[in-house]
Image 1 (spheres, helix red, strand yellow):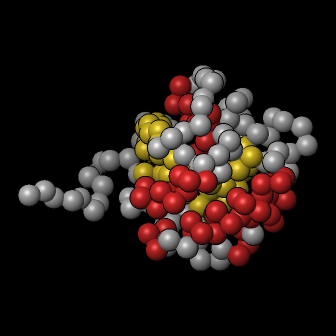
Image 2 (tube, one colour; image 1 turned 30 degrees about the vertical axis):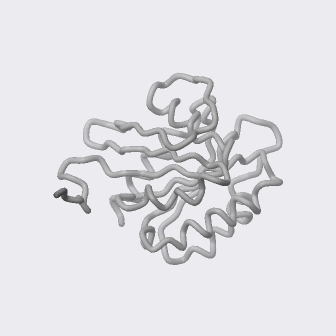
Amino acid sequence: MGQVLTRSPPNHPPQVVLVGLDSSGKSTLLTRLLTGELMETSPTVGFNVGTLDLDKKVSLTLWDVGGQRNMRTNWRYYLDQCKALVFVVDSSDRERMPEAQKALKKLLSEESLRGVPLMVLANKKDLNKTLTIREVSRCLQLDSYQDRRWEIQSCSGRQGLGLQQAFLSVAKLIKKS
């Protein structure tokens, strides 16, 4: 009847999945990356997808998946072709860091993510009293992930700060894995 493809076609940009708790800023940073504009977003139900051209040779297909509690069980359905995982946290929301840590830990236990590199984006650095990347790293217990390449960077989806550099790093992580 039909055929299921298990590998990306040749010359198809690698798929990168953006996840994180609701209101962490995933859709804002995706929109900023793809359009260069700041647009008002609403909570993502399902997903947003777009292709980011980093330069003439490097493109990434970015999947922004909704982060509401009831959507998190669906994250695993977006992981089959995932070449890098980007976990976005609101670095100004100290109270939700334990929830983010649990969500990340559960997600990284998925078999389909074995060996897939991780980029943590500490978003909303433009706000006052945000956690440093060292504090975010400690809250998420990133040092416990010895079995994969990971990086953490601060950024601001609203202002576009750090986004280009972060996704250039994602492309390098993919290349190294």
